Length: 321
Image (tube, rainbow, N blue to C red):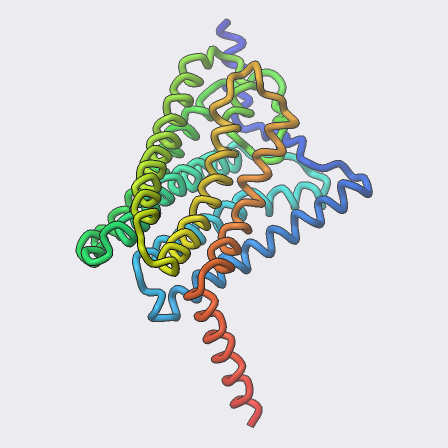
């Protein structure tokens, strides 16, 4: 027993092997190119949204400040996963160091958990704006907005630190091949040559806290919003409220649905293929959808984009003369 533990401890510096998402076939090369396009689109779309919110004074409101934080989290999320996956695929090297693996787990859980609470804060913001519009500047003041944002980052960070540290503390004395395209705690724990029952229960409890509590806040907020919208006499006001809230609910449905499917399913229902596809959806595809959903359905953001593009066009014309 002691010899096995010594062998396990001696392998702590040995790299893990990521089996990846794609093979080197024509079909998978096409899919890989599509993922890279989605990655670049996500970076540009979210970065543009952050710039617009920062530059346009009309967007200096709690709703858009929270939206800029959501875009920042999405930029960091795709940057945590895709560059390493792309480098391994293009260079045909599938290894990742224990430190790199721990960093991916920490950042993924920090950003994923932070986004859960941030979406709950955005739901509360919409509830106050629609149900208590006259008291909005008081109930949703700058200090509260900042505290909710910091709280989202901190709660996500605590969850990421605990799970990443515990996951890497297990001995890995057998196969170090991770059947995934990035380091994810559930995939890594399967390789541990130790009893992980308590940790898996702890991880499940964390998922309940990080997913279901914010989701309950969101559902409660939108239940109250729906009741208020149905009582509105103005058809125009009702349409505007529905347009704003439907975009937020689309983001919530996409993000929470994939996370719950990944982290809260019983083991007996899990397959590696399903885990890879769902993980790709919430780490790669959802971040590019968020700015598109908010910008296409949002009049203020579209006006800010036109104004910003007009400024760039006028500055280029001035530089020519």
